[in-house]
Length: 268
Image 1 (cartoon, rainbow, N blue to C red):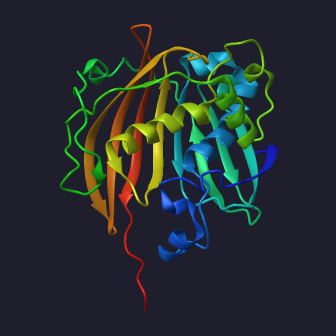
Image 2 (tube, rainbow, N blue to C red):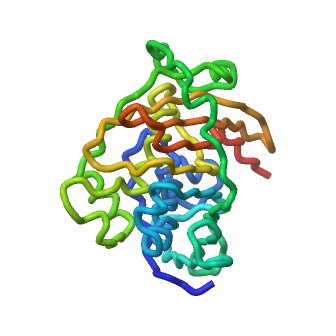
């Protein structure tokens, strides 16, 4: 896979409620320093897709992104991509590696057509309960959250471009450019953190289906329901289904997986 571009990872989440983006808390869990956000790494991975396919991918494409190892503040990342048969957005592989050649994250696309998930039409809760720290017992599978509303802002969209060193013209043209993928996926984090206090957690993976192009300035409703939770190697996971609606149409669907409780560090 040839390197399409290189970028220095910068931790733009140091002020986040999620303290895994701070050196002291990240080190308590065995990391060498603050982690760069997974949604930001996804922004890096989206670059070759949008460079090659533009609005087509952001309107009808797919992305399955998996985070294998953390990206740290200051790391130089190489973003590599490879087209499949026919050089279409349906069969693409993208990956990011650090300076040591370690594979940090992958993005793959799929040719499989899938209908809109029946949960897209779920009725959101009227209001969320009082926001409390997330826990296994408080996380009720199958119970929808209250919808949240989002109107992407052009300045914030450009800020997300800057944070990923993304200079593609599509985001700088006109008054209503497409929403940057980093900005969009960040709203799935917001959907979870609006419901719970999340002191330290990790983004594990996301499966995204773009159904309709989302543009800056549009009114978007975000509906969320937890599908399942499980434990593995001391970590506690949750998978959320997130549906984004605009103009009474489904625009984006995401299966968003996170470790909401990180295993305690084992000290010899």
